[in-house]
Image (cartoon, rainbow, N blue to C red):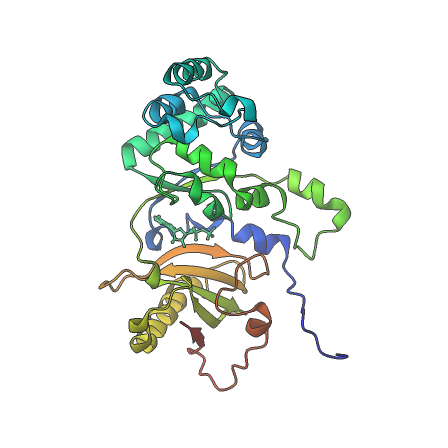
Length: 311
Ligand code: ADP
């Protein structure tokens, strides 16, 4: 219909995207963010390993996994003919062959050692790159989550995730201040970090996504799509907590005026944890809203410290 903009543009700049990279904000908000470790400026060899076709694993993976559960991973990189070979002898032979296969981590051995030692010292980790966690690849781990207890599990998730590929090759695609002709060059100039977040068990009911426009929370959505009846009774107190957290910690200090932040409110605790900061753009999931709704919210009936919230 003429004059009606159903698909409004959300202009986002390169700087706004860069401000949301984990390594850019984590040092400032360390005290309010669950403990994370950042391996900065990943070398090209690591990036190429993540982006390559197929999944090549280090020899220790076959020792850790295949010997224990040969059926689960043993058919990888095999042709259809090979997949029919299932006798224990044949399997053992294949495993020996694999262990003699070239170690893909030899081109980034320092980082490999760093990941191993961080997990050994601090326990399981959730891996992510500058912007995204490999949530779409959780199916690949035996526990079907992002909880990694070894470097091999980190590589499995990163290699199998399209979200990670997006971070590595399309993260600036939405930027209105980058000419399409320069996009490749701009991308080449980006530095990527591997973030290892120390794992803790999260109750998904208490995760919320807050949409901030011009330094004001305009909308909040529950992150988990499941319905939790008990949240409704607590809606006003949750809103108060979220507003106070934003007002004290983020409103005046985050480098962008418009952004999206995720928080976790642990049960029975007053503390609010910052989980992530994302660009205010269509690449960020608008969850229980549509982006059109967020962009057209009428806040004239709300006080300065109030906002729309969907559970
Ligand atoms: P993304 O921006 O890609 O969604 P997040 O950092 O928000 O990545 O993490 C994705 C999900 O992983 C969160 O919704 C949360 O449920 C879970 N999560 C995040 N951090 C941790 C952690 N330290 N331990 C356990 N689970 C976590």
